[in-house]
Amino acid sequence: MANMSKKKTPMPTQPAEERIHNFCEVALGYTEEMAVDEAFRCLNCKTKPCVSGCPVGINIPAFIERIKTKDFDGAYEIIRFASSLPAVCGRVCPQENQCEKYCVRGKNGESVGIGRLERFVADRHNEKEDNKAVEIPSKGKKVAVIGSGPSGLACAGELSQRGYEVTVFEALHVAGGVLVYGIPEFRLPKSIVQKEVENLKKMGVKIETNMVIGKTLTIDELMEDYGYNAVFVGSGAGLPRFMGIPGESLKGVYSANEYLTRSNLMKAYREHSGTPIMKGGRIAVVGGGNVAMDAARTALRLGAEKVYIVYRRSMEELPARKEEVEHAIEEGVEFRLLNNPVEILGYKNENDPRDPKNGFVTGIKCIKMELGEPDERGRRRPVPIEGSEFVLEVDTVVMSIGTSPNPLIKNTTSGLEVNSKGGIIVEESTCATTKDCVYAGGDAVTGAATVISAMGAGKAAAKAIDEKLSE
Image (cartoon, rainbow, N blue to C red; front, top):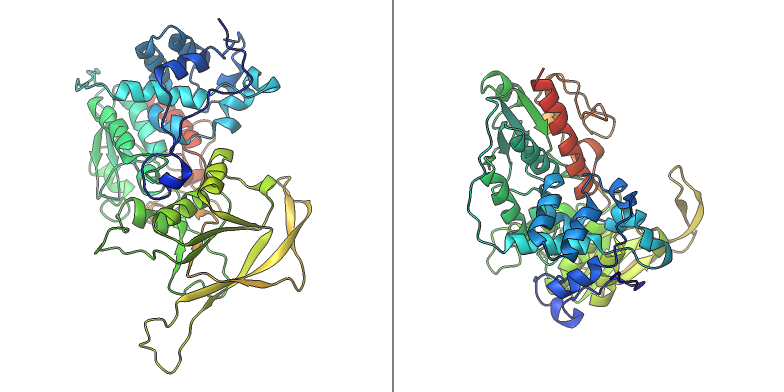
């Protein structure tokens, strides 16, 4: 019988006063009873409008129908047919702007909790001890995938299912890309990512870590010397952007990428860490996206006394997911909205350059803003209010205003063209680059975007590679 409640089945979470002292996952996941109850909110629409909002085309009504009958294995198989990383997507995808945005139930209440149900199904599957390798007939052709982030893993999984010998080359010492270095443990446990990577290995995908393509090997060498028939570039967008304001070179100023990588991957919060991080004190995070929320909430868990989000627009324009903003507020992050930094201030002692405080952050000067006319993307443009400057006293500043693709691969590969922002130029439907048999997708093409959109590009590229190599 249909569940006509206008509200989603609530997601259990750690209490805010407890979770700010640990890195354990905040959302605890549905029980079987909760999942079945939420599944019965789905009307199983014939037109399947939710599917149109899914970048990888999961048959959402079909897997939810399986949950209703407690056929959880069947539900997993439906999801897994379209998605290589269901446990990841169930946690970090912005469903409210994708599949759930088109849910019919959302017209008169809250949409069905599609992401929560996907997470439940994937977690239940991953709890099983299943060490069986998947036997797939080989086509005798090799494809190299550069980067083990969401686009690379999605492409690798899809190609492996199609019978290709796939090797993923990862620059860092752990596979997972932004899923391990960029997203904190409390939002996406690293064990979840590694389980998904292990699932791909069982399909025959090889993972080579500590391989910096562009330094260790070039794309040309992969194809000419190592016999790869095609290459997919999913190297992400790891080059941080800064505002270009005075004081950004002071000690205590981080990019969000560095701050999160030090914490997530290098365990910089541990005593005697080889990659230490500024802990405690007062911290300002500049920006309003999901990465800014991750950095702010990480700072709290590292022991910050006070954490500010400094963002030049209002709460309505904040690009971060609603759930992440709500969690940040619950945890005590203070939002300084309609404020824009103009200078980072630092302690200077010109008489004693050996002073350990010389050059450290002491504050951030901001100017108040008001919203003017809409810009080219329809967002109201922030305009500074003359004479409204003020100083926010902080010890650390984390700049979270976006990233760009790293130029390393382009600069060491012949025939690969990029746009003015450093993104690799591709043919939209096939992800083909300007170099024959080389494809690209995800943040390396678009700049920083969502996990699921990167996965969609990886799948599209895999299909195009298969068609190309089958000619």
